[in-house]
Amino acid sequence: MKVLVVGNGGREHAIAWKLVQSDNVEVTCVPGNGGTATLPQCRNMEMTQNDFEGITRFCLVNNVKLVVIGPEAPLAEGITDYMRGKGLKVFGPTRAGAQIESSKAWAKALMVEAGIPTAKSAVFDNAADAKAYVEAEGAPIVIKADGLAAGKGVTVAETVGQALTAIDACFSGQFGDAGKQVVIEECLFGQEASVLAITDGNTIRPLLPAQDHKRIGEGDTGENTGGMGVYAPAPIVTPELMERVQREILEPTIATLKQRGIDYCGILYAGLMITPEGDPKVIEFNCRFGDPETQAVLPLLDMPLEKLMLACVNGELEDVDPLRWKPQVSACVVAASGGYPGKYKKDYPITGISDAEGWGATVFHAGTYRKKTGLVTDGGRVLGVTALGDTFDAAFAKAYQALGEIQFQGMYYRRDIGHQVRSAIDLSSEP
Ligand code: AMP
Ligand code: GLY
Image (cartoon, rainbow, N blue to C red; front, side, top):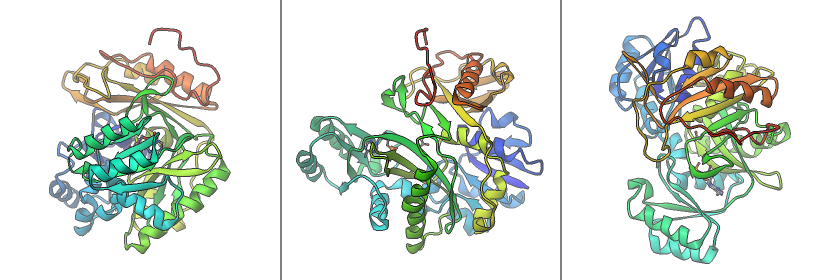
């Protein structure tokens, strides 16, 4: 069976890696990265991910049975609508469904309509009204550009002054059209968790919950990033809590999307805050697999991924057996380029990956490129090293041992990923 995966990050490497565990699956990644380039039963195709026409033609000529869209940008631009229109089976929501991520104002309105627990909020299309609201509400308060802003559109403002600056940044065009509207939200407290759920638009089933580490610095300090490491299953999301997430969040969201005439097929990713009272509240929805969450969650999945995805595109998820998981835990640590999430350089040679895998870890490539002369860095987040274990201590020990084998100029990683679930962390040595 031929599958095409769109994207070039760690998420797409993990998806392709999981798919090719089935002998009968062959994957083409568009454009893929240095990891998917050498994965067995997998190849890369040099084409940009917004060349909908070119990708579709390739799929039709090569009899591709399933298309998986990794990133949010092509979903928000309607790649699924286009490819479905040509008769292809696409795992990933339509443009209308992707609004759940591409417009925070739209997502908030949907949450209110569906009665989903989330932060109180208001939407503004001009700075004066937004500022008046912030003055009235006080700080801390959260300012969000409405549209896709590559993870940079959210400011958790500790002071009214910071909030006002963030409002000016949005309306001055710093995020382009994404900042034409601003969502202002009550600041939530607690622990964050990511619940990715797979859906055919009628039935929705959560994958194992994960906990990501968004900040660049140890101790969860410094700037926000795409995610510096993750573990699964996150114990904070107990089975009872997962039951509530299913009933109070996932099912009503899908039902409300359906009422709006949206046939949502793919992943619904709920970014949650687990409040100190133990209630799950939605911080945001994403219309795709999380990254790096996918790099920790898929290695635990103990059944073929294409079977689940095909059931979704065919509207038959209800008929699939309950999801099966390995009775282990998973740890993933991200190695980033020096300077990320700010400016960083690319094109540095990477060594030690096979030694790292010798420890029994899996090295997912997030930002790499395979040149004739060897593998080089090609992004902010470069690699995600994932290890499974019977305990989080064992899984993280293995992931960090493996990471110790890898080198590239300026390599940075956090040594405290999983601090919530590990017993002792020694941060005394030089990073
Ligand atoms: P987002 O880009 O929507 O994922 O938001 C980035 C990060 O901002 C989240 O992962 C949270 O850490 C934080 N955040 C967003 N909304 C809130 C909120 N209402 N309360 C507290 N933190 C928030
Ligand atoms: N790890 C956060 C995200 O995928 O949005």
